[in-house]
Image 1 (tube, one colour):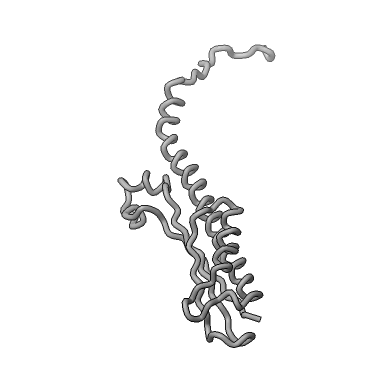
Image 2 (cartoon, helix red, strand yellow):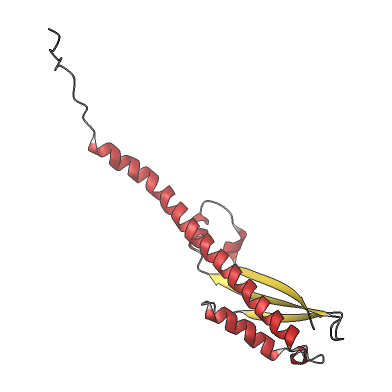
Length: 153
Protein backbone atom coordinates (compact mmCIF):
# COMPACT_ATOMS: atom_id res chain seq x y z
CA UNK A 1 0.00 0.00 0.00
CA UNK A 2 2.50 2.41 -1.16
CA UNK A 3 0.17 4.97 -2.61
CA UNK A 4 -2.22 5.16 0.33
CA UNK A 5 -2.25 8.51 2.15
CA UNK A 6 -3.17 9.01 5.73
CA UNK A 7 -6.16 11.37 5.84
CA UNK A 8 -6.47 11.41 9.59
CA UNK A 9 -4.54 14.69 10.02
CA UNK A 10 -6.19 17.38 12.00
CA UNK A 11 -6.70 20.40 9.83
CA UNK A 12 -5.12 23.54 11.20
CA UNK A 13 -7.80 26.00 12.06
CA UNK A 14 -6.85 29.62 12.52
CA UNK A 15 -8.60 31.52 15.21
CA UNK A 16 -9.87 34.79 13.68
CA UNK A 17 -9.90 36.45 17.10
CA UNK A 18 -6.17 35.91 17.51
CA UNK A 19 -5.29 38.22 14.61
CA UNK A 20 -7.62 40.87 15.97
CA UNK A 21 -6.03 40.75 19.42
CA UNK A 22 -2.52 40.91 17.94
CA UNK A 23 -3.48 43.90 15.81
CA UNK A 24 -5.05 45.64 18.79
CA UNK A 25 -1.83 45.17 20.76
CA UNK A 26 0.49 46.34 17.96
CA UNK A 27 -1.58 49.21 16.52
CA UNK A 28 -0.63 51.84 19.16
CA UNK A 29 3.07 51.10 18.68
CA UNK A 30 2.77 51.28 14.92
CA UNK A 31 0.88 54.59 15.09
CA UNK A 32 3.47 56.11 17.42
CA UNK A 33 6.26 55.01 15.09
CA UNK A 34 4.53 56.45 12.02
CA UNK A 35 3.70 59.74 13.70
CA UNK A 36 7.26 59.99 15.03
CA UNK A 37 8.66 59.51 11.53
CA UNK A 38 6.35 62.19 10.12
CA UNK A 39 7.14 64.68 12.90
CA UNK A 40 10.91 64.13 12.66
CA UNK A 41 10.66 64.61 8.91
CA UNK A 42 8.83 67.88 9.48
CA UNK A 43 11.49 69.05 11.96
CA UNK A 44 14.33 68.16 9.57
CA UNK A 45 12.57 69.95 6.71
CA UNK A 46 12.13 73.07 8.85
CA UNK A 47 15.80 72.98 9.89
CA UNK A 48 16.89 72.76 6.24
CA UNK A 49 14.61 75.67 5.30
CA UNK A 50 16.06 77.77 8.14
CA UNK A 51 19.61 76.98 7.06
CA UNK A 52 18.81 77.98 3.48
CA UNK A 53 17.13 81.20 4.67
CA UNK A 54 20.11 82.13 6.84
CA UNK A 55 22.47 81.32 3.98
CA UNK A 56 20.47 83.50 1.59
CA UNK A 57 20.47 86.40 4.07
CA UNK A 58 24.21 86.08 4.69
CA UNK A 59 24.88 85.91 0.96
CA UNK A 60 22.81 89.02 0.32
CA UNK A 61 24.61 90.95 3.06
CA UNK A 62 28.03 89.78 1.90
CA UNK A 63 27.25 91.13 -1.57
CA UNK A 64 25.52 94.32 -0.31
CA UNK A 65 27.40 95.41 2.83
CA UNK A 66 25.75 98.86 2.75
CA UNK A 67 22.49 97.18 3.85
CA UNK A 68 23.82 96.82 7.40
CA UNK A 69 23.37 100.00 9.46
CA UNK A 70 26.11 100.14 12.10
CA UNK A 71 24.20 102.58 14.31
CA UNK A 72 20.95 100.64 14.60
CA UNK A 73 22.23 97.14 13.84
CA UNK A 74 19.46 96.86 11.25
CA UNK A 75 19.80 95.01 7.95
CA UNK A 76 16.37 95.43 6.39
CA UNK A 77 16.90 93.87 2.97
CA UNK A 78 18.99 91.03 4.39
CA UNK A 79 16.08 90.17 6.67
CA UNK A 80 13.65 90.40 3.76
CA UNK A 81 15.85 88.14 1.61
CA UNK A 82 15.98 85.48 4.34
CA UNK A 83 12.25 85.71 4.99
CA UNK A 84 11.47 85.45 1.27
CA UNK A 85 13.62 82.31 1.02
CA UNK A 86 11.80 80.71 3.95
CA UNK A 87 8.41 81.80 2.62
CA UNK A 88 9.11 80.14 -0.74
CA UNK A 89 9.44 76.83 1.14
CA UNK A 90 6.30 77.30 3.20
CA UNK A 91 7.73 78.60 6.49
CA UNK A 92 6.12 81.99 6.99
CA UNK A 93 7.10 83.06 10.49
CA UNK A 94 10.87 83.37 10.98
CA UNK A 95 12.97 85.79 12.99
CA UNK A 96 16.26 86.92 11.45
CA UNK A 97 19.14 88.42 13.43
CA UNK A 98 22.37 89.78 11.98
CA UNK A 99 25.58 89.88 14.02
CA UNK A 100 28.74 91.41 12.54
CA UNK A 101 32.12 89.95 13.52
CA UNK A 102 35.11 92.37 13.52
CA UNK A 103 32.93 95.06 11.95
CA UNK A 104 33.17 96.91 9.51
CA UNK A 105 36.10 97.12 7.08
CA UNK A 106 35.13 95.58 3.78
CA UNK A 107 36.89 92.26 3.16
CA UNK A 108 38.01 92.04 6.78
CA UNK A 109 34.84 91.17 8.62
CA UNK A 110 32.12 88.59 8.48
CA UNK A 111 28.46 88.47 9.41
CA UNK A 112 26.50 85.80 11.21
CA UNK A 113 22.87 85.56 10.11
CA UNK A 114 20.59 83.51 12.33
CA UNK A 115 17.11 82.39 11.29
CA UNK A 116 14.76 81.11 13.99
CA UNK A 117 11.21 79.80 14.10
CA UNK A 118 8.89 77.93 16.44
CA UNK A 119 7.38 74.64 15.31
CA UNK A 120 3.93 74.22 16.83
CA UNK A 121 1.65 71.22 17.24
CA UNK A 122 4.16 68.42 17.55
CA UNK A 123 1.87 65.42 17.80
CA UNK A 124 4.46 63.03 19.16
CA UNK A 125 5.12 65.26 22.15
CA UNK A 126 1.42 65.25 22.91
CA UNK A 127 1.28 61.45 22.84
CA UNK A 128 4.35 61.01 24.98
CA UNK A 129 3.41 63.69 27.49
CA UNK A 130 1.63 61.19 29.72
CA UNK A 131 4.34 58.54 29.40
CA UNK A 132 7.59 60.48 29.56
CA UNK A 133 8.63 63.86 30.87
CA UNK A 134 9.70 65.97 27.91
CA UNK A 135 10.72 69.54 28.59
CA UNK A 136 9.51 70.81 25.19
CA UNK A 137 5.90 70.08 26.11
CA UNK A 138 6.01 72.80 28.76
CA UNK A 139 6.20 75.44 26.02
CA UNK A 140 3.98 76.55 23.19
CA UNK A 141 6.23 74.96 20.57
CA UNK A 142 9.69 73.71 19.74
CA UNK A 143 12.23 76.40 18.77
CA UNK A 144 14.55 75.69 15.83
CA UNK A 145 17.34 77.99 14.65
CA UNK A 146 20.18 77.94 12.18
CA UNK A 147 23.17 80.27 11.77
CA UNK A 148 25.43 80.96 8.82
CA UNK A 149 28.62 83.03 8.79
CA UNK A 150 29.99 84.66 5.61
CA UNK A 151 32.82 87.02 4.84
CA UNK A 152 31.73 90.44 3.57
CA UNK A 153 33.48 91.24 0.29
